[in-house]
Image 1 (cartoon, one colour):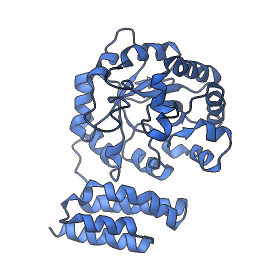
Image 2 (cartoon, helix red, strand yellow):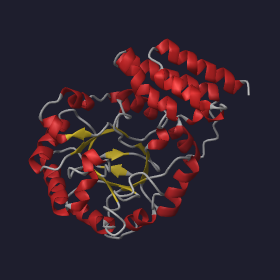
Image 3 (cartoon, one colour):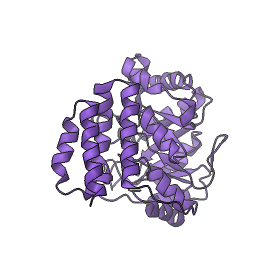
Image 4 (cartoon, one colour):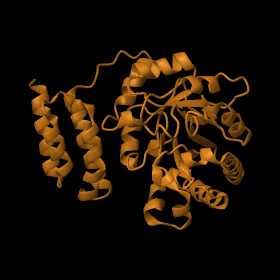
Length: 327
């Protein structure tokens, strides 16, 4: 599969862009374990144009994580064009436009998935951003605003006509948010539409290697994107790649996985500072499936979320390691 001149090889698996999750440290870990492409946290066009420091910092990428995409969102054509030009100066491999974020603070203002209620504007933004930059432009969106407006099959053709070079489809509507089950049937319809000639990337409910393989086998997508299943589990990409590539590799042990989580903590502390590095890491620790085998993990989880120093957090992780390896 290719986007522009980038060849991703056989059945690529991408890390989804996620706010407060896909910071550079996490992206590097996911890349190490086999993510074919990673994405930054999404970037507000308005904030970028206004040079808001915290937003500009999201454009920091490194050669270690390439290929890497930077995702932008907004609802104003000139702002999105200017933001795309600013992003291009950061030299990403791909610029992705977010027409899929369902959260209220974004969608209710007409950006992200809110654009699904204003298709003419959505297409204008896409068309003008494509014209404004030389980097490949892609789009990520949903099936429609709600189940009465499942417009993705038509929208995919319209977006292709705007010049995008790949389309990622999350198999839910905006109204569903992240509830219910992702519907891959419509993703498959888009992929199998003979008029579609750009890569189609499927997203939604891929939590295991078996589900990843099934998505490729059943729906024929060119790539898949993994989001929430990567929380506290960057090695999910290794699990998927091993199955897709028929690699008979030993599974990581519990101790291996805790080592990785501790490494993530150290990376974030070195990258920012102790306090904020812990904040960036705690949500991954609290969500990690590694600890599911611990009886009454709730109290341990609360302790993780309250830890304020690296030493105290690592002490909790070491206690978890001991409990799990002694079971």
